Length: 282
Length: 282
Image (tube, rainbow over all chains, first blue to last red; front, side, top):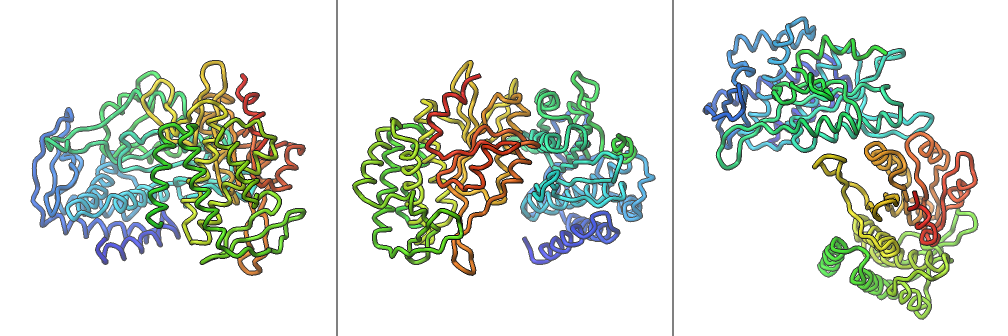
C-alpha cells in the first residue's frame, strides 16, 4: 500500500470505529472517492464485451486493468457526480432509490477501479466498501453498529459483522457486507444462523449487501456474472433466513428469486432505506 | 521452524491427509515424540510452584522455559514409556483408561515442551496435537475423518473441524481439538451449532478434546489453571450441546460439571474409547 493511502485508511478506520454514521466519516469517504476519481481521470477507458444479458461494461486501464464498470450505473459527469456527492454528504436520503443505488455504486467502483489500476490489494477495497455501506445504513438508522455481540448472561463476546441495536421493542440488524459473494455466499447465512441460535430465531434481521457478481473471464477478457440462485434457495431454506439481500449492481438471476419458490428477497440497494424501518418492527 | 522439523511436519500432514488412522501416521507420531524426548533429555528439569489444588508440575529449561508438565501424568521412565508407545503403535486400546490418558498426555507434552524450549511457535504444537488425537479416534472408530461437510442437496462445502461419518444408522462425530481453550471455548459450541442448524439437531455428536488449561503466571512463574465453568454451562444451554469434553490433564472445576445442573459431561481422555461406540448409536 502506498504511504498516502495507508494514512488515509488508518484515519478512515479510526473515525469509523468512533462513530460510523458521523459526518466526519462521510467527509473522509468523499475525500477518498475524489482522490480516486482524479487518478482515474488519467486512465484510458476501454469498452468490454459483456456476456451479461442487458448490461454493458467498460474498464479503466492503468498499470493494470480495472474490474468491469457498469455503464448505466457509473456516473461519469463531474457535475452530476458532485450533485450526488452533496446529497450523500447531507446524509438525508430523500433521493429516489435509483439515485441512491447510483451514488453508492459510483463511489464504491471509483475506489475499487483506482485500486485495481494501481494494483492495490482487494482487502483495502473490501475495507472501504464495508465502511461506505455501514456508514449509509448507520446514518439512516441513527444507530452506531458494533462488531461483536455479548452472549446472553455471560461476559463472552463473539466477533461478528456489523450489528445494529435500535433499542427495546425493535429487531436488531445483522449486516454482512461483501464486494462479491461468488462461492462464499454461504458465510452470510452461517453467520446469521449463529445469531439465531444464540439469541433466538428472528431476534436479528439478516441483511446482506453486495456490490456485484461480475468479473472478467481470465482467458477471453469478456465480462461474466457468476450466480448460484439454486444454492441460495437451499441456504435460505436449510441454513437460516436472510430478510433482504441488496445489490449495487443487481444480477438478474438473483432479482428473480424475490418471486421464486422458495423466495429470497433480493433488491437494488437504493430500496434499503425505505425498507429498513419496516424490517425493524417486531 | 528449523528445516528438519519443517520436513517432518510436511510429511506428517501428507500421510495424515491420506489416512489419519493409518499405521504410517502412528509410526511418524512415535518418531516425532522420540526425537522430542531425545531433545528434552539434555534439558534441566525445574520444579514449579503449583497453585492448582492437588496437582504438581515441573518444567523443562532450554533456550526458553517449557509450559508446565503434570508430574503424575508425564511418563519419564524410558522403559515404561516404551511399553506405552508400543501399545500406541499396536493401535488396540485394550489398555486401561488411565494408561491411555497417560500415553496421550506424555506424547503430546513431550512434543510441546521440546517446541517450547526451542522457541518453536504454538501453531506447530497445535498441528501435532490435532493429528495425535485425530489419529487415535480415527483408528478406534475405523473411519477416516473429513475436514469439510457438504451442504445437503448442494455442491457447497463448508470447512470444519474433523468430522467422522461411521455410515448409515449411526450418528456422525464432530471432533474439535484444542491444546487449551481459555476464553476461546465458545468456538467449539458455535461450530457445533452450525452443524446442528444445517444437518438437524443431534445428527452430529459434538466431542471436544483438550490437552489442559494450565499456564505459568507471567509475573510469579507459578502454575495456574484458567477455568470458566459457569460460562460453559451457559454455552451448553444456549448455544449447542456437546456430548463429551475430554481432557488429557482434566481441570477439577470442569470434571465437577459432569454432576452439576445443567451438566457438561467432562471426562479424562482415556474414557473416550469405551464411550465412543455408545455415542454413535442413534
